[in-house]
Structure formats: C-alpha cells, structure tokens
Image: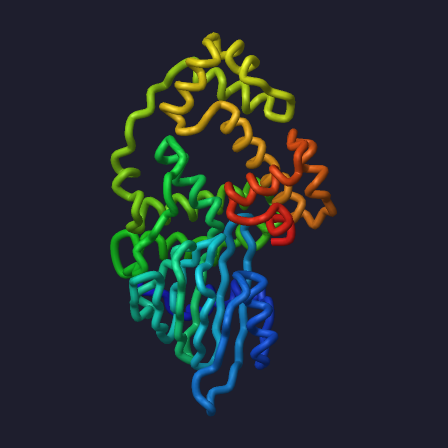
Length: 333
C-alpha cells in the first residue's frame, strides 16, 4: 500500500463529517481546541492566509480526524496530557518536536505524539493530515490488560512512524479501512461498536509501534492463575454496585484477609479494595461516555453515588488520577 494520499473515497467519506471551514484564526484555534485541547496557533509569513477545515468522526475514547490550515502555521499545545495523536500527512509536510525527538513528517512518515511530553509543530500551508486521537486512559488500560498488571510510568512512544513497511504500514491499512468503511460512519451512538473500535486502535498501536513497554508486552511475566484471586475478582465484577468489604472478599475467595491482600499486591500490583475502586471508576466512566454519546442529560454526582462513591471530593481525585481528566470533562467530551 502506498503512503496516504488524498484519495477521493477517503476524503469524500471524511467530508461527510465536516466540523468547520474557516479563514478566522480565533475560530479555527478554538474549534480545533475543543476536539483536542487549548493551544497556541499562529500564522507564519505576512502573505499567508488561513483557509482551515476539519472533519471529525467520534469513536468513544478515540476519533478519526482530517485537518488542514491552508497556511504555514506554528502549533504549540505544550503536552497533550489526556490523549495521544497519530498524525499522518496526506499532502505536504510538517516539522514535529515531541520531548527530545524531532522529525520531518511526510506522507511516508507519521508522527506519534506521546501525551506526557511537550509538543511543538510547524505545518506547511499545503499540509493536510489524517489524525487519530486515542484517550490516554484507553491506551493505558489496554497496556495494563496486556501486561497483566498496572503500568508504573507513562507510556512513551517513538515519535516517527514509517508508513511504508512493517508496523507503520499495518497501522495505515487499519486506519484507511476504518475511514472508508460504511459501518464506521454510523457508529457514533453504538456504544458496543465504538468501544471495540477504540480498543482495536489502542491495541494495534501498542503492538505495532515502538514504546517503552514494547519489550514487556512481547515477553510478559507469567501471572499465576491463583483460584482465590480469580474468585475475588469475579465477585467484585458481579457485585461492584453493592457494598463490598475485605471480609466479603475473603469469605467468597475462601482465604484469610491477610493472604488475600498479599496475593493482590504481589500478582495484581494493587490492594483488593483498590481493585474494587478501579472497577467502580471504570463503570462510572462507561456510564458517562454512554450518556455523552446518546446525548442524554445526566448528573455526575448521581452516577458517582450510584456506583458507591459517597465522598465526592475523594471520588473526583481518584477519577482524575486514573483517567487524567475530571468526570465533568469526560461527560462534555
């Protein structure tokens, strides 16, 4: 497969999801900022005139976007924080710096922007990019699931992705398939579909592009299938909306509370009650995302209470720590 080009079918599919077309700098910056994050945007050159447009397909914790500015621009978002971007030029080129790495991004070389690292970009006027956004929480959850334990530090990806062979080519083929497939264009409100698509994108990126957990994913440490841990986890998943104590878990796992605690810490990297909290936070997030995609009014406070969080201050802190954003931000999108 050739590097991304402005193929009529791909561009036409995306154009059906046009978000905006503008020659105004403030409108462009603010609209793009709502999809990604607030940032600094400036036009380079007195004769340059902005002619920007953006297409946007939401897929739960991910999205597929097309963006061009029509002028030489400098973009400074600092660090992305809550999400990752894979930027694939269909035309033109861009100078990209992320952390200590720099590349010239072209239709043969995509850029993978790590959420935790500072970003600085200069796009050419003819630069037209297909951009995949994946929420940091989705990536980290997929990585932890593949490893069999929580991650201990942020995921950091190699900046450059060669789209002409290997993992980069596989990634390009997946994105091209999704973008031109009919089912994706009606998937926005289908929660099961969008959940599977976001997981597919996250897992493919983790498996196909170099990052600091890649070697561990290739050779994951064996995790003992301890029956008492499995019984406790099954009980938590089945009863996470109900009050749960350590005594409840120990009773259903047929083991002492001390041994249960030690087992979870040793083989899951978290305490049993920490696992309960993590599951409940994930359920809160799923509820908020479903409400957002369906356009249904919902109260964050009520959802938190429904899932057993009585202290809203502690809930908000725990939610932000796990997902790198506030619950209200999840609901707003």
